[in-house]
Image (cartoon, rainbow, N blue to C red; front, side):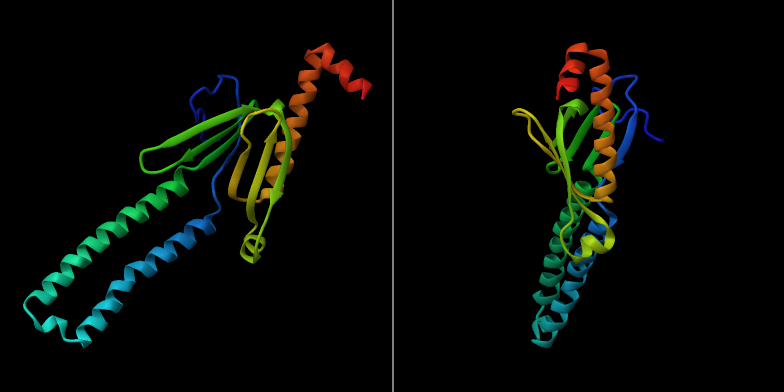
Length: 189
């Protein structure tokens, strides 16, 4: 595993089990959209040239000024979309689930909770492309007032759900062995 420590607050004996990012199709779809936007000005240039705007002295200069501003804004939005894709990470360790989410260019939110607090994990795959490319959302619910996590558009959501529930069950069994009161409660049910 290439990661030894990945997030603040990681304990020294805590092992990273999985590092999840959004499916590659999501990035591909974003790149296709921005490539379409990159080619769009050339279509407008053709339409403007047919109307005779470039015959004036200011026509070409004005067009290239607007084109420069357009590509500046295009680059900024493309970079922000790529950062949002690349810096949204979900980490499953032997002790915690960590959600690292980029909220804009200059804002990042890191939240975590312990595995033994997990009540339910469910996978959701919606749509033809999500079914075909095997990506979807994983919802992790906890007891109490803590917020729930949603792993958005990750690859193989059913496999992640199974692995996560296996980890939770192992963690709860180990916790019950070390705490005799919890072990009695499990035996009475």
